[in-house]
Length: 263
Image 1 (tube, rainbow, N blue to C red):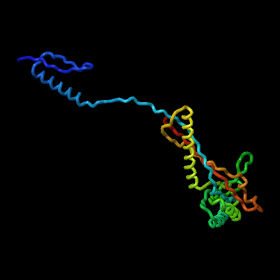
Image 2 (cartoon, rainbow, N blue to C red):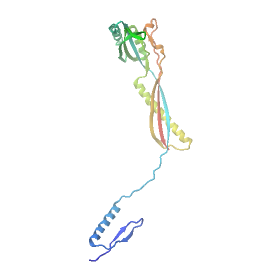
Image 3 (tube, one colour):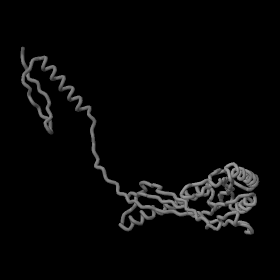
Image 4 (spheres, helix red, strand yellow):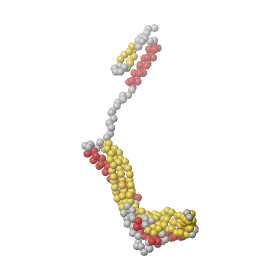
């Protein structure tokens, strides 16, 4: 049988060069021809891959603050009936009678919400030789009233007349819808403030802004300006006092925003 040499392609660096294979029999030669064909097909079918050098984006970050003042329109007050008795039953019976009268009056007032928040009965104790001794009981009933500020003064007066013995200081706030609207406005102002600061920083260094990369709302706070303690009084000490006047203030809504800008 004649032996023949077969030429195969071998990649050594670039360019391609030929290398003579030693003589083989026909079966070995056929197998080598198949291997060369497969290798050439893979080389031709392989997709081209290109690379581009990535550039680092330059950013500047600034924080901004927005502040909005809105009027307080809602008042929330806690009205309590407190009574003492020799026994827990006696103290509770006194409170139950007075609280029923108080609720009857409050249900006819111009309230936005009326809610019982506490009913308690606790022992009153005294100490002799560092030893506690129960000398009676105290019962307490508390109801929370929410109303428009222009109505809450009359509600407090009527509650005292109906048997309320403690009036807690009213909490004055805007309505929920007013707070939500003010928060959005504060965020807008804070974002504009942060953008202005970022642009000013770039301008100082001679750079031109490209666009906003990221905005993050850092914080939204609600800072009411409460009235002084003159509105918290005990009904037992309010005899002859003029009608309660509740004067509304304003609530400060503050938003803080972080803004990143590319240049």
